[in-house]
Amino acid sequence: HRSALHNVFSALAITSIAAYLSNPLIFSWGLTTMPWIPFFFSSAIAYLSHIFLDLLTKSGVALFWPISEKMFRLMSIRYDNRAANFFFSLTGALLILFALV
Image (cartoon, rainbow, N blue to C red):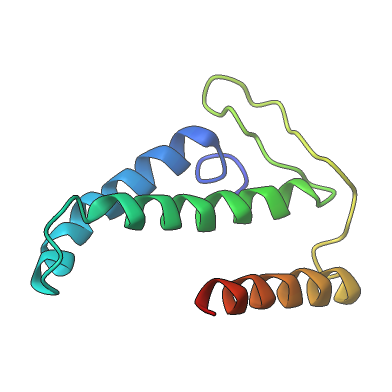
């Protein structure tokens, strides 16, 4: 779980594919000037923020898999830590709210 889909290479590949596949939908909304760019960056931010949060857990993440299986971590927070989950959920919700305002 924290290797094949939790690395910089899969983040780039998956967000690129998602941006490419979103083009027909975005064009149907009437947006025609490089519509994939905002979708790519918003998808990349979402994907990379998930990886960043997993870097804070005890398990860590294999950031450069398949080149290296070395696990990286920044902290040792348990994934089920209620206080940490509340803090990061609230922070994410506030960031979304501020972005919309």
